[in-house]
Image (cartoon, rainbow, N blue to C red):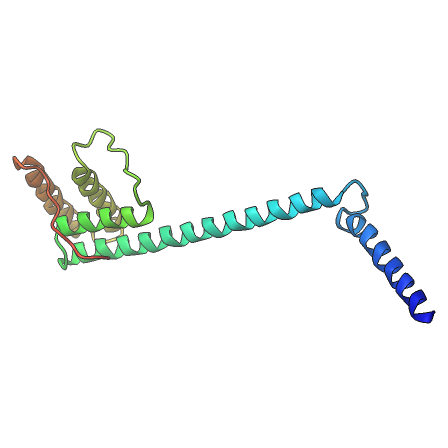
Length: 163
């Protein structure tokens, strides 16, 4: 008989805790029902998943920026050619945004787009360097770009390995 009473009392305690759970979670309001709670949990899980995806995208973007900065440093130091650097920029864009084509914005080709991007990144990088060297490097790169764009076959990137 005692175990039956303990069972009923335990059941009563569990039922009273269950009935106060929505009140505790809602800050005192009793308008929550179990279905609303399930929907809230699902929404929370979806938001956490989106947050995780956005953090991963941020990490990939920051990694790509670091890589591009390194590519520009190699270009300026003479360890890479202008075309190699532009090809690597294109490769990085494809890694960060697979299948997404950048807006050409009046550029004749993707190759021209990425060559111009390298010029902009290099100019920005060189602004923090010695002015005379900045002008010499930028003059050389602009001339190389102009010569490449004037070729009958246009700008063609070299074949490069995986990043």
